[in-house]
Amino acid sequence: MAPRVAVVTDSTACLPEDLASGHGITVVPLHVMVDGETLAEGVDVSGAEVAEALRALRPVTTSRPSPEAFTETYRRLKEDGAEAVVSVHLSGELSGTVDAARIAARDLAGEGIPVEVVDSRSLGMGLGYAVLAAASAAARGEPEQQVAEVAARVALASSAYVYVDTLEYLRRGGRIGAAQAALGSALAVKPLLQLVDGRLERLERVRTSERALARLTEIVEAEAGDRPVDLAVHHLAAEESAGRVVRRLEQRVKDIRRMMLSEVGAVVGAHVGPGMIAVVVSPVSD
Image (cartoon, rainbow, N blue to C red; front, side, top):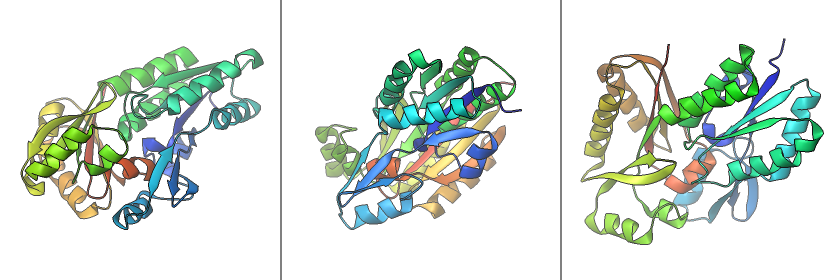
């Protein structure tokens, strides 16, 4: 029997298709515009293809799903038998996606489709692990308010640390200031960033990429401590470096319950640029 509460997220969660479908999770795609052509993330365009476009200096921009896309999704889930929906999305500080979901939820309030919208204040598997926890709660028969609370709690407990080869792509997308990006370029440093209350903020500046990735491993090891954790390593066009980070973490973090390695999608990729490595730490509560 399908859960009475349907769980929805967006494509920035970086959930593999088989994992999302296996847990009954509906994924609404964000969009990327490359050379003026609008493409659905995970459907029409991948992170690798965006990396190629960025390297070729082709114009790349991103956009949120429309409220109508969420309205259609919620109505379809009701038609399929769902009695309520929990919709969990990337940080509202980074995208208007969660606002579009809220507009749709309000528009459907009179149609008997209760929708709980959760701003994860995260992205990547910081969002993805929260969505998986919500889907598990829904499968246990929890009501929509409880499912939403589970998602918010797991997302809030997660941490994300990001290495970028350059701050230029974040500057272009308005995710950091021009002065901060210029300072990083002038000093020829490799920035480490941290997700703080849904925003990307500078954590440290390191002189070389190899030292930056070593430092990233140290930070994650300290953050995990003795707790059981789920980890995820994301990259954009940097599979070899990401694999080295995974191996280091497997050697140094004491209690890893799940480890995922994946290339980020086109939307996140458009803002961080090729060479990005990110690690998500999500504590596990038994």
